[in-house]
Image (cartoon, rainbow, N blue to C red):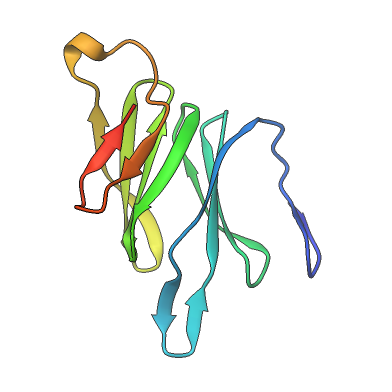
Length: 128
């Protein structure tokens, strides 16, 4: 990774499948983070702190990450869908996202990926 004051270059040659501006993360009264998550075809999820232009966290999902979502106004959860038909849920713990749960398609629908995951206004998740 290379960086200057206004740019960040990630050393990743994989395709970018998705990007999401995350809900602002408030650490304390003086410190809040403006984050963006980028999902790659090689299974890497890179979270960048836009205010400092640095990599904030890296997660290896092992499969292509097709889509990302969060609940509106709730930065505690980060959810993403994968090429292997699974969906991973991460939860914020001490300012870093940690794996909470992996959900799989029902047995009769296991073939193929989950192309999109979104959060609905009632708090439910929807996939396709």
